[in-house]
Amino acid sequence: MIANQWVLPALLLIPLIGVLVIPIFPSQARWVALITLLVEFVVSLFLWMQFNVADNAGWQFAVSTPWIPTWGITFSLGIDGVALVMVLLTTFIMPLAILGSWTAIKDKTPQYYALMLVLTTGMLGVFVSLDLFLFYLMWEIMLVPMYFIIGIWGGERRIYASIKFFIYTFLGSLLMLVAILYLGFHAWQHSTMTEMFRAASPPDFSFDNITAVVTAASPQTLSVTAARWLFAAFFLAFAIKVPMFPFHTWLPDAHVEAPTAGSVILAGLMLKMGTFGFIRLAMPLFPAAALDPTIRGVILGLAVVGIIYGALVALVQPDFKKLVAYSSVSHLGFVMLGLFALTLQSVQGAILVMINHGISTGALFLLVGFIYERKHSRLISAYGGIARVVPLFAAALTFVSLSSIGLPGLNGFVGEFLVLLGSFRTEPWLVLIATTGVIFAAAYMLWAIQRILFNPLDKPENAKLTDLNWREIGTLVPLVIVIIWLGVYPAPVLRRTEASANRLVTVVTRGAAKSSAGPRGAIFGGGGRGMGTIRRGVGATR
Image (cartoon, rainbow, N blue to C red; front, side, top):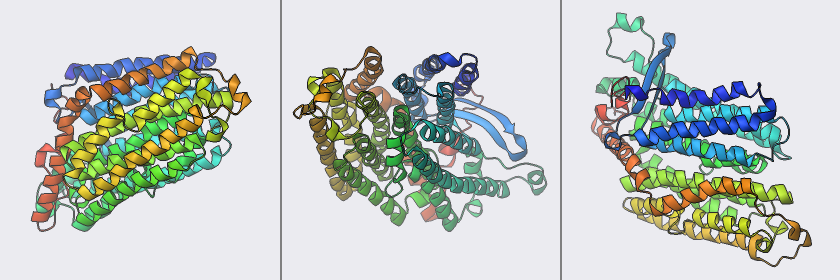
């Protein structure tokens, strides 16, 4: 794998090169951004083709180099199966988001597309970082471009929405930073080095170092109280980003006021970083807290409440874009249910829901943006019967809506089915309640498309609407292909994520068992098999 260590740094660097090219060709900024992100997608396909499924439990394409040695911060990158599919989802969605902005963005276009490229680097950095400090840096980098994208190119209430989005996310991430610093210095203080050597050495914020030191022996572990407070800090940062009920109130405003591409990226990619954070950090680092009966019960309860609440609120929305936004609260509730049910089937289902939600909801926001450019209204009541006028749009909206509600044969069905099937083994009553969310999803989505597409055409001005053009069709075709592929044959994704999902289940359950058996409780489980293997592949041939 030494020969492949260029791939992850290249994925972070290519968008930044595009940012430097845009000022040279400002009038062609959208072409520069599109070509840059298409190159990014092609490079990311190399990860998919070269990923070693048989060695999926380790870190692949790993690279590590000192970055800020005084503070023990390294530039460490690597992926497992979960990170792989998140990277591919990002590089797949971003060029389509650029195409969705092609005619919608008319002012300050060089700045807009430069911010889109910086945002790409930040999001990919979150998925591939193997150093806690680097993870936090990338987490904050992606916040700034989206703040400006909403605040400058958004709707009438864009300033309010962008500030609300920034404050919610930033406050949560500040608590995560405090927890990261605590973990790093705790690991340094309780390392097995001699006092003299430790005094001359900086802390080490890499995942494996913190894991190895804290799990080395009982006196070096965190107390149960400290582990719970640290888990709470990570939980809040990630729950806001998901967003879980009741931390979701920033989402509808941000979605409604963001430009089309901003909504696509928020729903398709940025929300997944919250659930990815639980998979990568919160649950493996603090298994005793994650599986504490009270804490786990509260999280599972909030997940199910989010499923039902998001669906019911979506059912009464007059604004179609806000309806899709609230549907995200419901769909991401299934992800949290699957993760904390903690069976192999439910975790793999949760990962599939993350992918499928990004595809289907991203396509829905693109379609909302396309019709908004023609009608300049997102109100469901402003349409009615337009299937007669725009049949291609009607076919695309119906198809994507069916995928969103989980029609068998399309992508949405497989993930939710696995979540419900796997969660039923540990949480049967919660699954019975959550299943009603599927029914509500069909209700709000089918009722919406009936009112938009198939009611009587009672507004004469709608008879002049134009159907999808070739650019818009070309933007939707890749999404349609993936929707069918993941619905009919999700096996390639399941194979690449199976070992990573199994590792999560093993690490968390073993860590919680060790904690209950020990006098003070180890917060990390699995010895050298879990997050402690993170550098096993660094600089080594895999």
